[in-house]
Amino acid sequence: MMATILFPLADYLWFYAGFLLFVLLILALDLGVFHRQAHEVSLREATGWSVVWITLALLFNLGFYFFARHALASDPRLSVIPGFDSSGAARQSALEFFTGFVVEKSLAVDNIFIFVVVFNFFAIPAKYQHRILFYGILGALLFRVIFIALGSVLLQIAWVSILFGILLILTGAKILFSPDKPIDPSTNLLIRLLRRLLPVHPHLEGERFWVKVGGRWMVTPLMVALLFIEICDIVFAVDSVPAIFALTKEPLIVLTSNVFAILGLRSLYFLLAGV
Image (cartoon, rainbow, N blue to C red):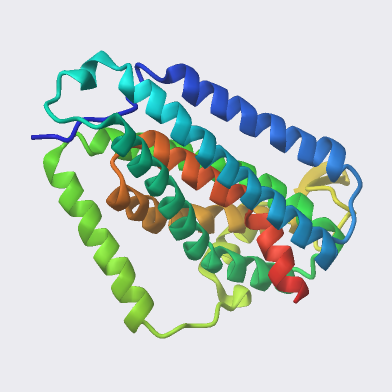
């Protein structure tokens, strides 16, 4: 028998929409107000923003617990289930959010390593790195929403849960037993393919992603770095999304924990880079 979804999309569409609008508002304030001017992010600033993102996640989890306790207690679908404990289910939901948040943060270390390698290879000045990461995170959020939506649909098929479990085991085995291979962007097939498909301007042009040269539009190294980071995140999502679904079958919890972990990824990068 399939487990009952506590927060189905049909009943909580307003919550999903409100949460995503809240995230877009935060991102708009981030780029339009707090980081309007390109500048090098200091260790102090990165530490402050890391604290802000973690605090927001914890406050959301606290509010989510009280919301879940009320919503589950008044849900007629659940009241007919013998022995259903709404308070216990709310505590479990909050614990699953926190666990998913921590797991996603841990898996994000691979992303941070990619950031360092790519920025060094393309010689991206520190003051432009936040701009690349902002749009990179925006794209990552979009693709995570797509992956999570797809995963929640696939989980309606019984054997997909087994497949996700196998993927999780393979991911763990890869981390434990596969030797770390240094990434060399100069020989990386993906970067070579991007350079072959796109007209790439050889030099940076401030914080611009494309420029017009001799009547021809060309992408700058900033755009190549952004695309590479974006594609790498899609690859990492194949590992991370099944990992969270192995912890909880609630798409709402998977989405919110993933989003909060990703939102703090930039400040975590600058924090570790500045240490």
